[in-house]
Amino acid sequence: MIIILKKDADQKQVEGLLGWLRERHITPNVSTGERETLIGCIGDVAKMDIGLVQALSVVESVQRIQEPYKAANRKFHPEDSVIDCSGVKIGGGNFQVIAGPCSVESEEQLIGIAKSVKASGATMLRGGAFKPRTSPYAFQGLGQRGLEILLEAKKETSLPICTELMGFEHLPLFNDVDVIQIGARNMQNFDLLKEVGAQTKKPILLKRGMSATLQELLMSAEYIMASGNPNVMLCERGIRTFETAMRNTIDLTVIPVLKRLSHLPVVIDPSHATGYAHLVEPCAMGATAMGADALIIEVHNDPQRALCDGAQSLTPAMFDSMMGKVGAIRPHAWKRA
Image (cartoon, rainbow, N blue to C red; front, side, top):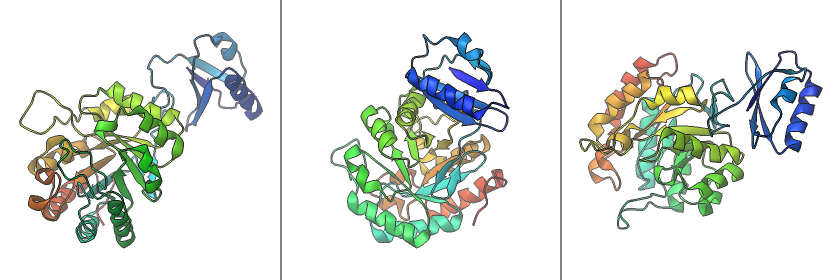
């Protein structure tokens, strides 16, 4: 349920209303926009007397909400959310590019790539320290040492870092990480989602599961937000379909659909979605043109020798070329360094 307040609402009366809601075990989520102030009511509102609320002098109107996700719902929060990633803002017209290797392999490798992507205009650095792999025999990442290398690269370049959290027992190791990624395989690991919601306010990059619907993605975001962390970004990384010409099917229609349903920023990952380097640039350009809030791109200095996902990784030269084209599409939102 949403309570829309009058523009001249008395603050003491509003506080009284908020207290009254809490007494009934309803969590009020106040959103103040340019045109109006809303109170999103999260909890069991079925037995609440809407007429009683509507009669209050500070209330303009009351609306029932049918969708099961509340905090992530644009009806609760009409203005776009802007997520501050250690000074780099995503959403609300701010467009960013996150780039780096699939996995951290060495200090020399990562710092070299970090300097290269920054020179081409990337505004954040990605790299996996802990890697979920389909095969137990594949490279699983450097773990804690990988995080240390990421922090060294951050010192060298001043780029905020984004890396994946696989289990909540590792969360204390992520104190200096700027953006925590929850991967596709963990999108419905609800215990993990509740932990990152309750234990941190760091921005969370939540990737869509390979067979997940958009409502399921939004409900996973709801787990994080309902637990106390509002700083969530939704990431499309391709879904599994019958098509075999590419690794996954990238669904760019999620951009306008999610922006209609939710106020959260939408990030597109064309690297994991397509699985092939030659498809990354056109998909990145398409996502940029369709209004994505950010791109996350895999870049490797020597893709043929990469320990993880070399086939989908751009070389620094390919990334630089792509960035020029992306920048031409959205010059008002982002400029190359």
